[in-house]
Image (cartoon, rainbow, N blue to C red; front, side):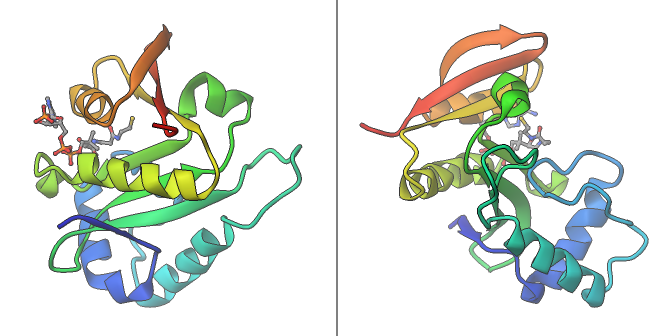
Length: 172
Ligand SMILES: CC(C)(COP(=O)(O)OP(=O)(O)OC[C@H]1O[C@@H](n2cnc3c(N)ncnc32)[C@H](O)[C@@H]1OP(=O)(O)O)[C@@H](O)C(=O)NCCC(=O)NCCS
């Protein structure tokens, strides 16, 4: 069963394997923009984890970075399989293209239903935050993400450039 957990050093080994596997591809929802893939030591992860946990703290409304709860997607054996970021509110850029929720599943664990299950769980977390709808976006050619969003109830508002923008209602 897929679960969402908060980032934790105890996932170091499966996390490091996954990061190697992502290679140079984007780790959406990871919050790790400047990661040195040559340095995946436990001490490095420990630093990342404290940064990721701190990102959920509230910041002034006009701050450029919005508060974000980072989750890791883990499998039934409690191994890291992916990332999910839940932004607590939207700024202009997120409203235009980033949305509230971003995610990525490590390449060798795709098409097992992890993204769909993780997004469903993230909707419960969004309700807990008090949101009554969330914006989730994907590139027009990203079939996996599009199906994930649509399965979780995404209603297409529009497409801006290559970004398809979906709202998911949380009040029902
Ligand atoms: C998009 C992504 C998160 C999907 O993760 P996943 O765990 O493979 O997704 P799921 O297994 O839950 O599959 C969801 C649906 O998409 C379909 N799907 C998954 N990958 C697909 C692909 N490459 N092509 C077509 N359909 C695909 C699945 O068959 C499933 O469809 P169904 O519900 O109709 O059976 C994953 O491919 C990924 O991490 N991609 C790179 C990062 C990324 O694009 N993140 C999203 C940013 S918007």
